[in-house]
Length: 263
Image (cartoon, rainbow, N blue to C red; front, side, top):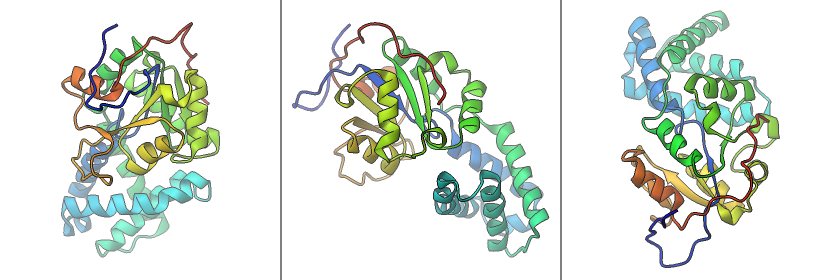
């Protein structure tokens, strides 16, 4: 296996496993959400009081605000979805009853399911990486939700483990979820790389346990740490993305692969 060049002069331990995020790294959550909001907006006059960009910004803000309660188990996913849309409607000047907010949430969910897709190039990346290393998905969410995405995307044969925060009892950036993933991959932290879109959850979480992070910055956000972390902005061309993710001399793992497992 040939060496992969790296821009760093410091030696980096050889990669023997890849940890990878699900939402907005493999599954195109953000642009699916935006498309679903656009479809919902076309059918609801009060939503058209705000631009698509404003609704999208409001949605993201509420997602960030409510997600910690969902991940802790204090609020169910369904209740969070209903509350999110009740607040969005209120921001547009519409006061919805609980039943109306539930109906709006369900309509949005229907659009979301219909419009969902993979991040362009993600499946091809998994195919390439899985030929070489154990690949373990590390993701925050409910187990059933993430398992269904694996089935929908047809990537079950391309990953060697699915580690979900609900099952582990801790969410990224907490180190426990990364240590479970490393156990499935069968490698120490210094021989793994973590690839994901969230600076806090993926980059800082990986750093916290000694795993080399690679930031998937496809929306071209400014780096919080002045470019100190390797960065991928597109999964195409595939070879360029692969080389940045691996970032070092690679080494095939000894023995058999980690078994696929949904925790």
